[in-house]
Length: 104
Image (tube, rainbow, N blue to C red):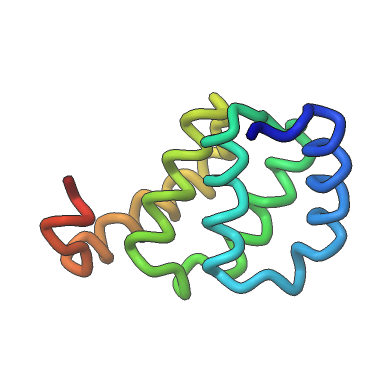
């Protein structure tokens, strides 16, 4: 069962209010779930997400980071160059944390 667009839009706006309290896992899994459902949040929502991720980037585990990057790619959202560089540097530093199953 796929939720209706209006429902996802309303829930996503509520999530925006709670985002400062999200764990790093929530910051990765929430957009991943939206991407899997085929729902693309607004650019403003995605910018807020990336802002919150940027503040906690060093706390993200490799799997969470990969889910987040998958989601941003699915949304066709490109973060600001400075944030993008920081994310890619974090990917580089966490690649060794991925198991063979997580890579495949």
